[in-house]
Image (spheres, rainbow, N blue to C red):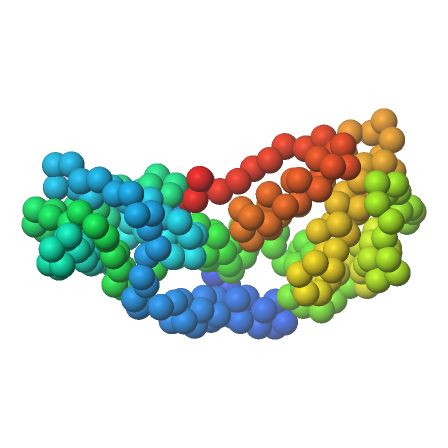
Length: 264
């Protein structure tokens, strides 16, 4: 045990100032955001359910209210019969695969008309939240290069590192005409200026934000010519990924699609 303790990388923050403030903010925000998660969620599930060997099989219809398998959550199931009788069950989710979930029931299932599923207890850390905690810990142990990355310095520290090699990427998107604001956003994203390392684009639905993203991708790939170049486009939801993929397909852009298994 003592040997394992000695092998753990130490954290020495005595000579840190601004980087430590940025990491402290990143770490403190995690439990605050966790406290904002609801303690009770009504899970939206498909009306078609089945029960076998005391386990109720349901299919989530919405990602935000999906059924999860968590040690700190319990599932309440309420079913109704044709005669109007209501039965209540309580137990834990024992298996989740994408949208499908199996719930172990505390009694024999008797519902035949409708099922209501409710999760009690806060959702645990998501994969991205757990990974963020690991990244912050490794940064404190100085076993990664998080704070040395230009993107991290611009985002967390507000500093500008050494200038990138100058290059000009021209707008090259013949597939659709862009308006003035879209062109401005594309030029900012294609810019090699340090001030444009992080670009925030805002607008209500239907204003062409996805088109701007696709125009940037197509322009970068066209600029690369015969050089193999990869552009990663990341979105928060599978729906957003699907929308971007459809527009990339319309632009005849070769791409590979990665989607979360949590809701497929």
